Image 1: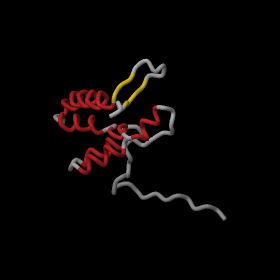
Image 2: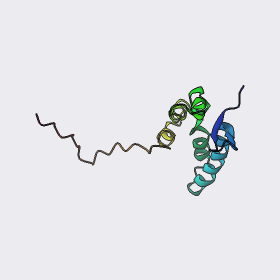
Image 3: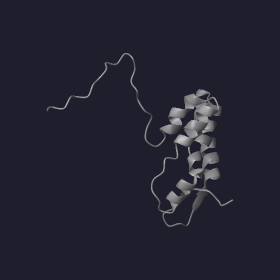
Image 4: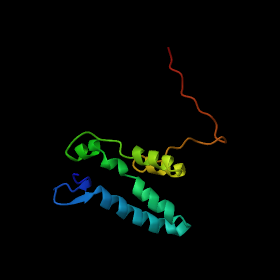
Length: 115
């Protein structure tokens, strides 16, 4: 199996495999999450956050291809393994976590177009 990369430096002198990236991130997230007693969740978030980088489409991206959604795969895995509460953090780790508002907030509507 070909080596799957997560990152390549701009000058192509350094590479980081997806495995190295995920396990390194998992260890860091575990350490940060220890402050509020969520080491296991932190570790799992780190492992899942970029598993989409294993895809052929992402690997082509590193060779100059088009941008690829690589976050959704981890969010789907979180849901499939019973930790769906982690899915929003995984899905939003690049673009931000969606804010769907709350029941206490007034409903807003888009203004209608004038004819």
